[in-house]
Image (tube, rainbow, N blue to C red; front, side):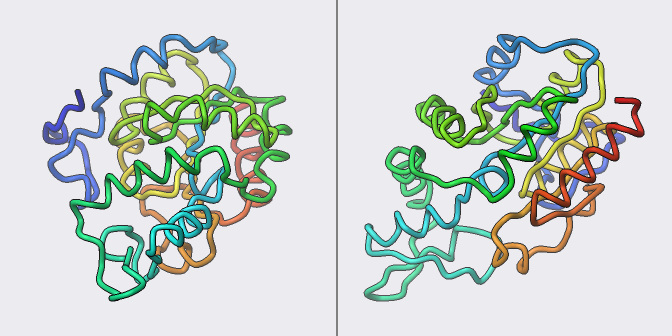
Length: 243
């Protein structure tokens, strides 16, 4: 299970991480990591999927339409922003997890890629290993992997639970080489900053509407909304690290 312990003493956690352990590693996640065939000594790119590799929000809006709902992007959150078309009332917070579960079950296979993602990773994979670390439900992991592969991103997928710091720390221990992490969620970036500070952290938000709602994470080294910029940053970091 996910450890809900306080952050270790001596670390700095972002406000939205308070009360959570940024080093926590869910019991379902560790076996997935240990099963990877990673090359020790070769750099590793650890990428989130939604809004980094795949267009999550665009797909979610299509699904919500079928449910008589719509997404009112007033803030960088789903809770409170998913509303009923007939009354314009927000869907109750307790109902959002089941709604997202239905979305992933019905739509994971149909999500379309973020422009430039496949080409950038194809180029970068010549210099670094690539792993997709995504908080997709375990039941939809294989569907996510097939969808990515169908769009030219045939990389190992880890179905994560909770913050991502613990998973990135373990991956870094296995490769003993530079690690680059990309994610759209600030608390995931913050958890990686605490769990494995040497990781190069990219705050990536593909949807321009979302990008306007949230400034760069204070725990990131670079902020990007397109893969051309992200690729340049990653290539520069790899070169600086001697790869």
